[in-house]
Length: 143
Image (cartoon, rainbow, N blue to C red):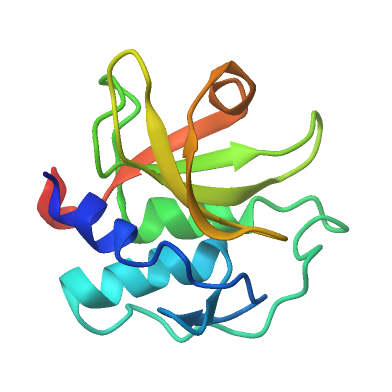
């Protein structure tokens, strides 16, 4: 199993908490990615400034996409693999602002993500989620 997937699954059951990144206590989708980074890479590459739930939407800026491209390795040129960081656009015309980690592949693909109202869970990566993926990245050691 991918070290990224194992780390992400270790967060399952963590409650959803906006701006948090503490396994077992609270995390949002970015906090999950940050926590997995710390477990596998060490210190985060930048300090995370406070952000609102609608961050970057009023300005229509792809801040999350740019940050992912700066610190992770783009991997859109190959099929989804366990451990890939998935970036989602949650609504047509909106900015990409949800993240998850691909876990299971094959006939029943899954991904781990922190979802408001649910906490950190492993969900089916079915057609409704797959069509929202706008970019994929790998952690540096997983390439």
